[in-house]
Amino acid sequence: MLWSLLKIVLFVAIAAAFAYGVLWIIDTPGHVLIAFAGREYALTPIAALIGLLVLLVLAYVILKLVGFLVAVVRFLLGNDTALNRYFRRRREERGLDSLADGLVAVAAGDSRSANRLARKAERLLGRSDATRLLNAQAAELAGDRTRAIEYYKEMLGNDRTRFVGIKGLMQHKLETGDTTTALALAKQAFALRPDNPGVLTTLFDLQSRHADWAGARETMLASRQARLLPRDVATRRDAVLSLADARAAFARGDTERGDAAALQANKLAPTLIPAAALAAEVLIRQGHKRRARKVLVNAWTANPHPELAAAFAAIEPNETPAARRQRFQMLISANPDHPESHLLAAELALADEDFPAARRALGDLAEREPTARSLALMAAIERGQGAPEAVVRGWLAKALGASRGPQWVCAKCSHVHAAWTPVCEHCRAFDTLNWKLPPHVEDPRIAGSATLPLLIERDQSEVEAGTAKTARATEAEAATEATTEVEAEAESAKEAAEAEGEPRPAT
Image (cartoon, rainbow, N blue to C red):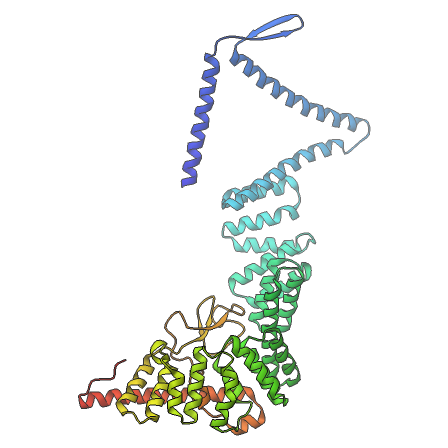
């Protein structure tokens, strides 16, 4: 609406300026003298201007007539195609003008003009390969997807337009949700143009959605060779793909490939938490405990995480609580000021039944950054030190409604995940999960895998078998049961308080 009003104002301004100029010339006194062949001609200014315009028109007509006469002379001299070339050149000029105007109409969103100019360009040029794309875009702009798909299919028969046809069909399949067919089309487009940025991005996204990690790595390498990815981004993606490949290999029983991929992932991204934990499990199984400790300490220095602590505990699964506390000083000292280090030290002290040390390790974390985990630790400390049952239940009641603390959160859609995955479960984005506090209320159904991981012992048979995946599942299940017990105790405390008429614990 605003653009239409602006065009009207501009047209009126130009018309007014032209009328003012004509009136000014008419009112200007004097004559224009033209001397030619010994004679002088006196013309008024307006007559001189009209005469100049007439001369320009005559010159244009004469030039066109000369061109036509030259073509006729060539035809009479034996050039049978001279006249055809002359008229064909005129048609091509008009067709190219229509094609250009049609592209402008598509960019402006004028579907009616785009369709009309597309048909005119096709009629004048007689080359469907040059106008099919314009026809397809005009049909899409008009909402006629069936007609647009027909044009894209017609493009597949021409080498010049095959790539554009495949890409148009691929985009249509993506819009309709048919990612399987879109993936097949993306592979065909990649074979034709392996350095096309749009195709590389789409192909990588589709391959990661379908867990085609080998294909995604090939696409990522092609993007790096085409200099479409910075070196650090490509290295990070390579690490995530190696980690996903390792998990897939372990799932199908290919231990050799899984071990190699897990170690490669940790080598490429030493601070990637799940890669460090999986690499440590591989090294422990291979008997390289010192290397496993080094891997976990390096990762803990950058990103302390309960999964790293659980993997560090698995290095010596049969040690006493006191020996474990001493050994874990290496890990805790790598990042002593991080809240996760304080929580870990408190858990280790509780396991050793050193309740004063647990309180000192926890400090004011339960008041400063209250989470279900820190509040549950405070309840355990109070109970261990013989505090009244009401105090213990008060901490448990607070833990019941407190935040679970950091979780795996998608940086793109903020979806909270129970465990790390290479692709977001909600928006299907690749490598967007970060360990941080959720920006919204968390889903209570998410398993509390980060709650007191070291107070839950692993099953000895699973440790001996070296089945890391089963061990992690057992830990998560035990943590869930522990959380359920905490909730049950808090609910019992509330019911008892109501029955006795006592004030309910503050939440």
